[in-house]
Length: 351
Ligand SMILES: Nc1ncnc2c1ncn2[C@@H]1O[C@H](COP(=O)(O)OP(=O)(O)O)[C@@H](O)[C@H]1O
Ligand SMILES: [Mg+2]
Image 1 (cartoon, rainbow, N blue to C red):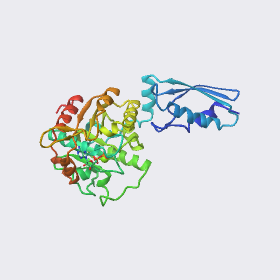
Image 2: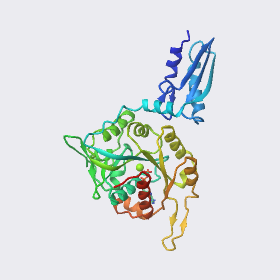
Image 3: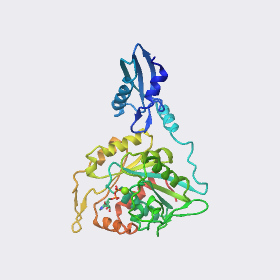
Image 4: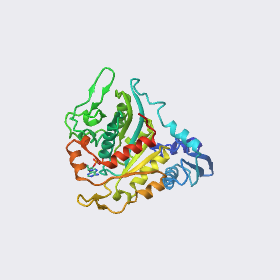
């Protein structure tokens, strides 16, 4: 006998691949009618014209067709109101992040990219350095657990985290930037961390709950590339005020960064702005700019996602060298200074 319960139970195995939750818990199944072997319902999308809608409908249909007695599945699309969407998204969050009571963190921003290797960690580190130079108390939470590279940029040795009675103490750089990273917990820098899924999520949560950050004006969260589970953990469990997207001219021609931007829209997390890295090479003799990786598409991307193009950074061998040597605190780049000023302005950070 085909019952509502049976159908909902089957649909609770169908995931929204972006949000990592099932269609039933996301309250997306509406107006379910079962009649004579035909199942009809409306798939209530979190945003209209969601590009995943056909994918989810196909999964739902295939799952339901496997139930005995089903002859047809009829799916219509609807979309949630902004309020409904907020409620559904908040349901997925833990009640309240239980930040250590000793901590006072004003602003949490994360830095995201579509692909790896676009300079996301370097930009995060350079921005942190500039904010610290301008007088802010800055922290970096390295949420790229398996590809942690923040400590290396600052020349911090492996095993640099200490635990106190009250919690984990971050490593501190010469400029006073507080850093927590899985790399600082390992004995040797190059040990591969083989943890997966839930362990990674648990580790990120620990970096928030159990670290004695103290008073921080800006905490930057360096994410792994793409829209992995770790990214979702950060977006859904930390009070992220906004996200900075880092990309390159090459990457923009692809769809990866758009996918990341799209996920942020669905999660109702503001995109602060876009930073295009490795945009051009500035000729040392004549100051002319050469777009060695092709034309820029970031202005278009910014328009499409109603955000700002914050900066276009040059490819600069000095950056690569200082970063490789763990001397990111010595990088001087006017574009990063302007970026830090913009971030402070946009987010109304007053010192
Ligand atoms: N603007 C730049 N000019 C020159 N080299 C850069 C620049 N940005 C990043 N790099 C180099 O590119 C490599 C990848 O950067 P990284 O920050 O680790 O990328 P991601 O975090 O996106 O994987 C590093 O070797 C870094 O030093
Ligand atoms: Mg990185």
